[in-house]
Image (cartoon, rainbow, N blue to C red; front, side):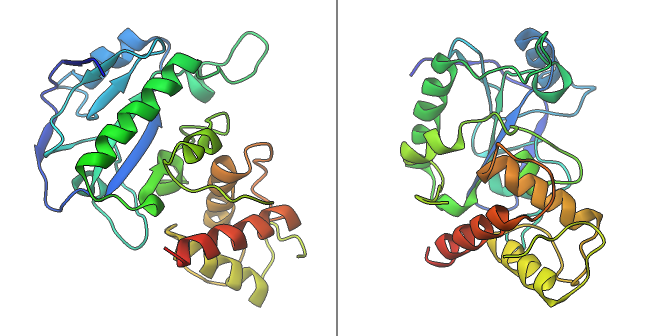
Length: 243
């Protein structure tokens, strides 16, 4: 695929081998605004790649360097995810720049086709487990919503990028406190979310459940662990445990 090297000054040395892939949306009004921001030394943010709506790709940071895209985050007990990951910023206004009808802006087909090709290129060069292909909201659920519930995770999984179950309890909601809540928290923690199993459905649990829903149940992002969400958590937990 055609990749233009457009270096950003915002990087430093890695402290760990690459074993993660993190997908973001830019959340800015235009691709050019995102391009300028990711290369602005005062912004102190960057990613390895920027993917435009028409499928064009800019490489901003070399893959052997630590780009500054993940921020404070955790997954499967690991932190400093910038040192462990390759980050792709996908041009999309997301929740900050909705369409005129209030809906989230779509990801064009050409962009997703290019993303699949880029992910395959990255995965061919690094030992990245399928369970460590994540969205920004997976690793920072209190801070981030990207790449959003409109992102086509299932399409990527069918192309061999990440995990999606082949198929689809009592509901839990904020304020609940019992052993079943703790069991659900333990499953989410084993998947990789930074969630201590306290047995209380607190603000962090709600944020993690909503992040989980954005990834695997994008038609419901309530933050409530209803029966369908609980089943899906169990399915994903089983898939991850088998890897």
